[in-house]
Structure formats: C-alpha cells, structure tokens
Image 1 (spheres, rainbow, N blue to C red):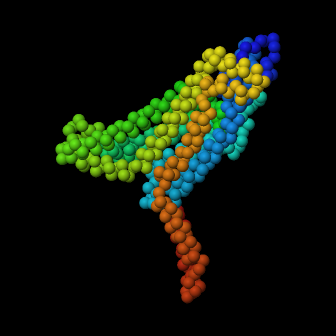
Image 2 (cartoon, rainbow, N blue to C red):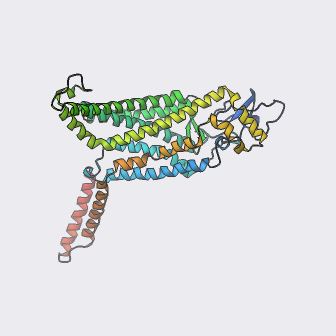
Image 3 (cartoon, rainbow, N blue to C red):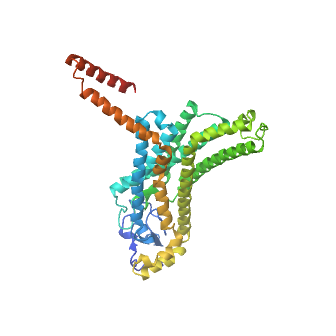
Length: 431
C-alpha cells in the first residue's frame, strides 16, 4: 500500500488501527490480509487500515447481491434434496432405488447448502468494528455457517470417494458393496469430516472473507484443509479413471476378438481372467446400466469441487505472496488516497492480486447447484408415481373409515373401525 509517516494521521480512506481494540474479530495481520484487517504497517504499533469489509474495496458494488443469489440457488437445491430424502423415507425401495451412498451424499449436500442459507436468513453483521471483520469467536452465524461449509464439504468429498470406490470394486473386481463395506464407509465417511472440521476450527479458524458465509482463514489453510482435500479428490479421480480405463479395455477386447479369453495379465482384476471378453462386456454393461446415474453425479461433483478447491487454494497462495511483498499493492493504496476513496477508479490496480469477481460467483453458484444435480440424476419418474399412489392410498383409507357401509349394523361398523386403527398402530410400530 501507500507509504505513510508515523507523525501524520492515516489519510482517507484509511483508519488508524490504534483507535480500535486489538481483541475480537480475525487475527491481526500485516499488509493485505483478507482474513482480518486490511492494513499497511507503519510501525510495530501503528497500522493504517481500510474499512471493513475488504470485499467492498476490491470488488464492484454488485458483488454482494450476486453472492446472495448463490444463496437463493442453495435454497432451491436444498428443497430438491429434502424431496429426495422424503421419497426415500416414505416410498418403497422398488420405486426409489434408495441406497445409503446416495442418502449420505444428499445429506452432505444439505449440510453444505445450509452454510449459504443460514447467513442468507440471518443477514449477519460482517464487521466487529470499523476495520475488523467478525470471525467464529465474535459471530455465532459465522461459526455455524463455517461449520456447515467445511464439514459438509469434507463429507461430500468423502462420500464421492466412497461411490467411486464402490463402483470400481463392482465393475473391476466383481465385489459387491456388502455389510462390511457399508460399516467401513459409515465410519470413514462421517468420521474423517468430523476430524477435518475440528482441525479447521482449532488450528485455523473461519471468518467473513467474502459474502455472508465464513470460510477458513489463510494462515494454515493449505496444510489443514486444502492439501488433504485435494489429495482425497485426486484419489477419487484416479479410481474413476481406472474404472473407465477398465471399461474401455473390455470393450476393445470384445471388438478385437470376442471368442478369445483374455490373457492373465490383460485385465485390471484376476477375476476377469476367468471370463471371456464377451462375458466381461455383458457384466460391465449391466453394472453401468444400473450405475450410470451415480457415475454422472460423481463426475459432476468431482469437477465442481476441483474447481472450488483450485480457486480458493490459488487465492490463499496469492494472498500469502502479497503479505510477504507489500510493495505489489502500493499502487492501489496510492490510487485510493489520490482518488479520495473512490474504489471504482482503482479496481484495475488490485484485480490481479485477488480472484476475479466472476470466478468467485461462479464457484458459489456451482456449489449451490449440487442439490439440483442430485435431484436430476437420483430422482426417478417412479417416485412421482409412488407419491401419487401414496396419496390415493391415504385418501381411500380415510374414505373407508369416515364413510361406513350403511347396510352394516352400527356395532359391526364400530368394531371394524376399531380394528383398523389398531392395525395401523401396529403397522407403524413395526415399520
């Protein structure tokens, strides 16, 4: 930022950090720091800081409304997820094809979306004071939204990994996901997100960085959050490509010589060596026909999360470099002073040091769309027929109770109604 003298007050639009307390809000850092105060250090106890929030100075005026639009997309996506969950809960499995991998992935999407919906409803104050943003210690909404985003993000990646691994085992190794795999998946799929979320809060913390949702601070974000997440995403992608490669290999084998069995080293699995190419092709095609929805969900979600992780990891890296080289923002700071705090005339001088507004908004909207993708690929027309049938059954049941046959004696009707009520209670309890 600009050069100041310790003998002069901070020029507008900057504020003297000594006028504000050092407690509360995000941790104080020097130079440009999107985690906390946006300051230029003049001396160890004197900093000139821009007003909070930081995004008001580095992005256009329409930034916050566009970020809020992503929150409304999350509302629609959450409604889609809840409709899926209700269908899985109340409709027969023959009509929904419910599976614990789908249910857990949908629950993860709901948690992630709550990180956008809760701030949208609460409209929290992003700033602790004039120059200090709120964080998880000073804003309950920040703590809750940050927990939902990071725990839901971790859980989503874990259950995508589980779906990718399950599909690989079924196609390449002919191993169904039985009870053992299910118990292991539940333990790992929810245990690791809990540990990952706790580490983010304990070792790094969350604060208002942009919009009304809290994200992890920059200090240890790579070590605590981004690197483990990217490693897990990389494993899921490798497994998905291995599965795809196996399917292509089987298809090529059928085209080249459908009568000749595969040699012992020609397949990913030893199971495949005991089958001919045409048998393998029929088995793989059958599994793909059953699992294409899950494959589509995994592919779209992995692409979205990779985009999200790369963008934010890049932003953290840029902020770290700017923190250690404050001279790169001197031109921007001087521009703000010369222009009397008119940020619009200085946006071009800071734009190369932050992630572009369009990219951030695209990431938020893509993350919010996860529930819509789940509804599109995991929802079925048989669910619609199931709800129609359920409504008809409930209507006919009420009619049977409320409209007794007038030809029957009153005592017989009363006995049948009483028996129906007892049967309903017994059925509900057993279910």
